[in-house]
Length: 238
Ligand code: MN
Image (cartoon, rainbow, N blue to C red; front, side, top):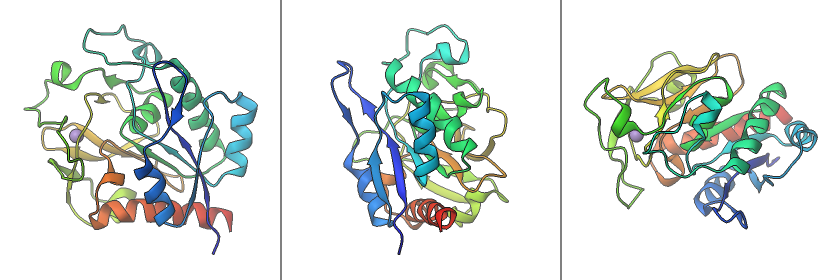
């Protein structure tokens, strides 16, 4: 059986000396039958385009905050650390993989990057900026394998077919979140208070972003999310 090649955009540390990825992403992709490859954050647009042609899918992993300048806002004091190297490469990777019609799975920071890449905006800091409802705890303590809040799944979405449930229990380690949804994206899950927790791009083979960390969870829906991503990447290739 063919093992799809999945490019991963990982973290760059503050000193800009290391590129790295939590092993849980590697492990879950490998378990689902993929070969994950950590991508260099220093590629040129031409190198990114070749990656999009030759790889079978893209995973945008979790990490630090997205620079609000990228959605035309001034930073608020509660903004966390940003990283221009990572912002630059991910804003090249997303359009390149979309143009190539390759599947993209976006996790935590990944859903935020996807949204900003498509022209959407973020809450720079949920606790201080979210006023639409009584906010759940979205910044849980370890262990991260324990779900901490529920999300309601939007019926009729591609994500609902993967979730196979109206409601999921998810972990939550984010202080930013999607605010205005970027053109082309559809909301497919929200928390009880209404925070956007998952989006997808209708008409694409598999472009899904989740605000939680399914790579740390072991429920059937989390496992299916990776399995489905990898099988779409395989079907596209074969
Ligand atoms: Mn959450």
